[in-house]
Length: 313
Image 1 (cartoon, one colour):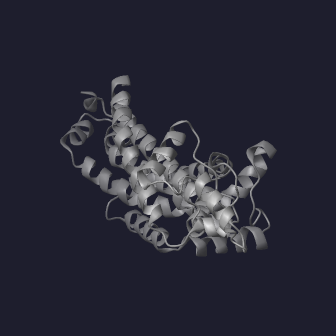
Image 2 (cartoon, helix red, strand yellow; image 1 turned 120 degrees about the horizontal axis):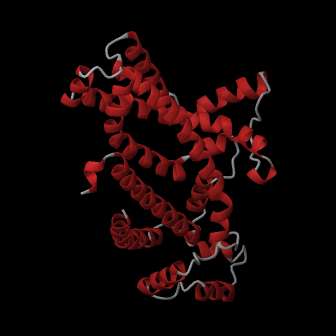
């Protein structure tokens, strides 16, 4: 296991370098000049020249890249061109919100989607299978923002059980924190549950046709033990792959849900940085998301080995 982790970390280094080069290069292709916006309405040439010198914008692109990369390796992702705050500070303030929301959404998705997928596979072509497929299709088709508005009307406006918007951190109370994140987690989790359900069903159906499953049944093992211990364990590999990919997407893709529920999350910061041409923030955010994807892929590789001993060779 340590050797596997070490090899994956070594492979991650060139991947991160390639991502950093692409992000840095594509940023320079965006139209407009953020320095002009920073200089104010008068746009004093002396101020503009000073800003360009401060941010190394007068240097050739390779020199600018290595300046940024050298600082990033030391944990310094630069300063926001708009707010003049360190990018690491901005990320540290926004990422925990989206990370907690993503974790809750994945818990909802796994509990609902995996259980429905197993039930649909075990009772293939029955009313249970048709019902779960209908629910899955509905979950994929319903837009997140529309479902979010409906949940706000029901649970916040009519029933008044949960707050309609805002965010309360964990330090201010676990109960209040969960209340602010429950509705957005349900919105995100339902869509993910539908995707997980369909993949779990397909994987379980393929495994249930295997010879060793028929052998386990012939030995007189309880159906519950055959399904959960033998079939489900071997059907987990594609489910784990999908789960890690979906979780990675949530880190940078929960923009609409964060907007509907007014959450100060990571996704909204990414969109604002792109529209404001805040180069330092965009570069730092994309680098953090790339690291997140690599760590999730590493976690998936470790889980593969733990679940399936045959993959340890």
